[in-house]
Length: 149
Image 1 (tube, rainbow, N blue to C red):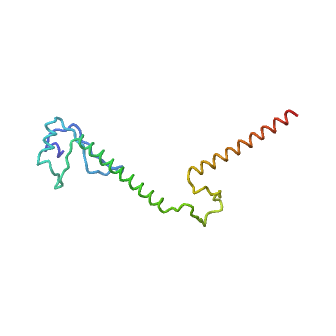
Image 2: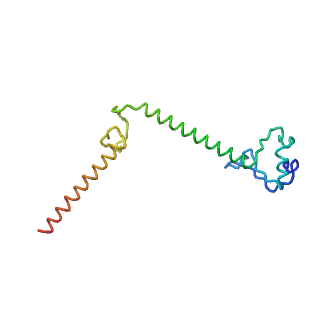
Image 3: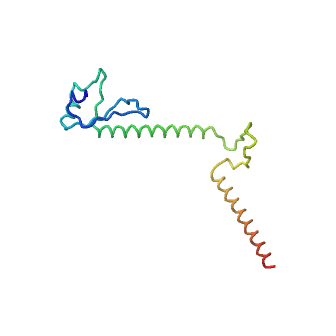
């Protein structure tokens, strides 16, 4: 291979590929000795391939750079999400009336919650459970009376 002809013997050469098996444009090379690897990293004759400049990195440096790149990408996604969330929140008006038209007949109609916030929804759910428990207790009391008679 070209790498062996300019730097020396390799133990492993891995071409990175996309899921569709198309070459991704980068390789990982394991040289037989550290001196051969250093020759490849420092030699000007290894600085380009077919007229294209090569970006050469030690594997550990590549991992550090990749980790920083992924963190920056995740931070940007997080900031974008926060900006979108702030935009939606700022567009909402407390106590505003919302009219929905054109919904299918099968759409569930429920009583509106107090401004749709989670605490109000939780309170409604707790009230519903309390009513169900009282009804169950009442039913049990009636069944006991029937058994006693």
